[in-house]
Image (cartoon, rainbow, N blue to C red; front, side):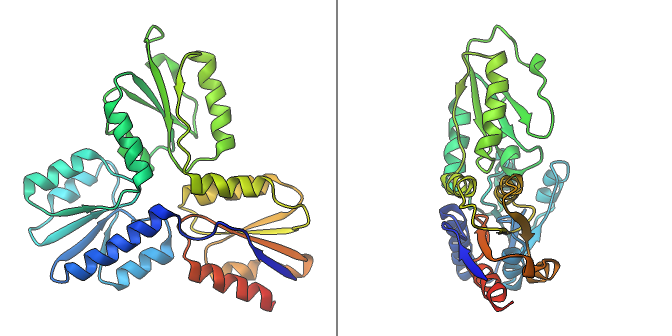
Length: 287
């Protein structure tokens, strides 16, 4: 059975940067109580590794975030995730005199600054409750969420408004955005569109849509909480020339009857560790 890893693979620049920053923070703050506010990235293997280094992961919802931040002590040190965060979280920590670090992906940070500087109405396309969506919605009083999982209520925006800008979560599918852009154009023909899909995610999606039909099995490696990974899986699953399986842990391979396949393509999300990818490849080659 032929097994091929489809490049690019494993961590994108933003994820690698966040992990490197965290390693440096751990090394320089050994006497502090290190708390990761939310998951650094959406990959359980990486999160478990961070916990083994002594980092506490504080999970929260929008309703519990402020309560948790207000409960922190002087020796606590907060690390914000690579997805971005609500700006008011920083204000709470500054008032309490608690030190924090920000590992937000530079691409996401650039988009957040664009939102802050924008004076028009903004339609933000994203998944409700996703950290990047929460961060984006916190940066403007004139921003409206177009939730990818529900219909958008255009009545929320004044039809006579002069400027409408459209931005989006960086980990969405470019095909998904095409459909939503078309919908928005029907209501606001003069809207300004800014396609903000992370290039690392876009290239993997494009590789998926142009995959050689000789592959009869595709393995998508990563965590199901990862937006860019699930979008990759969705794209693969639509192609009926091959079967698709999501692999989050080695045990997932036991669910697959590999005797049915001759040629396997391995893709990964941008937060999947290379060690896991290599382990999966080796296991499949041994079958």
